[in-house]
Structure formats: structure tokens, C-alpha cells
Length: 116
Figure 1 (cartoon, one colour):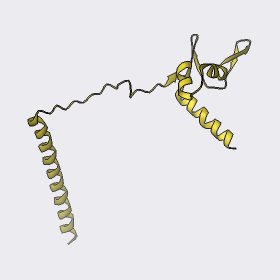
Figure 2 (figure 1 turned 60 degrees about the vertical axis):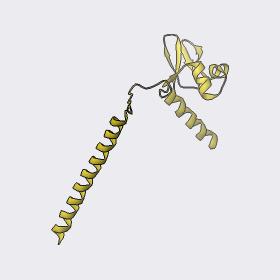
Figure 3 (figure 1 turned 90 degrees about the vertical axis):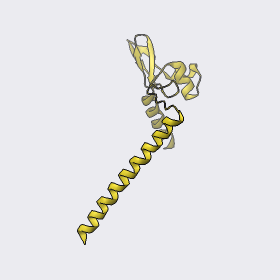
Figure 4 (figure 1 turned 60 degrees about the horizontal axis):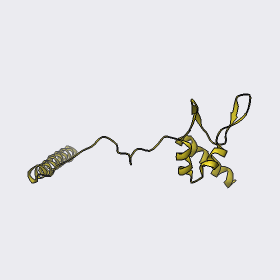
């Protein structure tokens, strides 16, 4: 009895695979006959790319602040080549960038501090 149930299960699975494959093939054939063109693009468009590091202008827009406010939160020299900043940042040559992930983490930490 148990072997019959297993055999019936295997037969049902095989039948479902064959039927599914046939349906997919028919759908593809209909597209080919009707002249519908299927286009698959792998190049991301500008809308799908999200910045991972921000400039001051981009960060101001992201946070909804003015550039002057972002500059106040950004790096400031305290002397002897030491800088301090409220916002996480990285400096490449003379340009300051703000990593999106670090800024998001900083915002979450600020929310926790404010909540308590």
C-alpha cells in the first residue's frame, strides 16, 4: 500500500512537470508567432542606482536640510590637524563624502537617544 502511494506521488509530480513545461513552451511560442518582442536589459538605469556615498549637496537633499546645516554637522577642525564631526564622513583628498549606510545608522542611533 505504501509503495503504491509513493509511486502515485512520483507519477503526479512527473505529470505536473511535463504539463508545466508544455504550458511554458506554448506561451513562448505564442509570443514568437505574434511578433511580440521580449527585451531583457541587465544594465541598471539611473532610477535604479542609489548613491552609496553623498556629497554635501546630496546629503542635504537626502536629510531635508540646508547645505549650511549639513556643514555645521560635518567635519570641523579643532586644531593640530584634528577634526571632529557629528556626522560620519570620509575625506578623499580635499572632498568630504558621507556614506549612506553610516548616515542611516547615525540617524537610527539618534532616534534611539531621543526616545530614551
